[in-house]
Image (cartoon, helix red, strand yellow):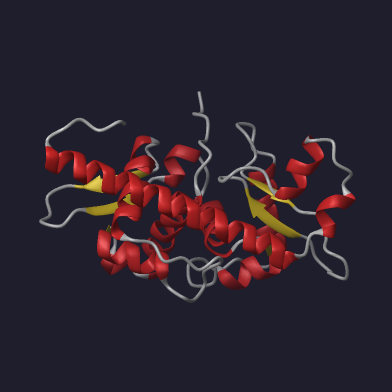
Length: 225
C-alpha cells in the first residue's frame, strides 16, 4: 500500500526541495552537510519565497522529514550528511521529482517555465513532455501531488502548483463554499505576503522549540514535548 503523503511545512518543503536540487546540480557535494543545506535554503536565486533559516530550524525540519522517510542521514562520516528519498516514498520517476523540486523551490510555474527552470537537472524534450509528467502527478492513484491553477487574467498559460504543503488558496475558498471569484480579488502580492508570514511564523516556532529543548537539556529536565 502506498503511504499517505504528509502535509509539509514551508520549511520542510524548502529543505526537501534543496536536497533534491543539489543532488543533480552539485553531485560531488551530495549528500549535503547541514551547513551546505542551510546555505541552499537561504540562497537568493531560484527561490520563492526567500528565507533566512537558522541551523536549528533546518535541523528540526530534517528530523521531521526523517520521520516520514523522505530524508535519510548518511553514516560513516565525521559530519552528518543528508539525502532525500522522494522517488521511493512517493513512487514517482526522477523526471517527476525534478518538476516537484522546481515547484517546491520557486512556487507556481507554467509548463514552459518548468521546462526552462529544470534544464540544469533534466532536459525535457518539449513542453508536451513536461505536461505529460504533470498530468501523471495530478492523476496519481495514491493522491495528486500537483494541481493546475486557474489561469490568471491576461495569462496565456495556466500555472501548476505542488500539493506537498496542502491545497492552494483557490481550493480552500471553494471547499468553504466561497464564490470562486473571491480568490481572484486578492492580489498576488497579498498572497505572497501571507505565504511569507506563514513561513516566518513556522520558522520562529521551530527555533523556539529547539531553544526550549536545549534549555531543558542544560537544566537536566524533561521537555514538554
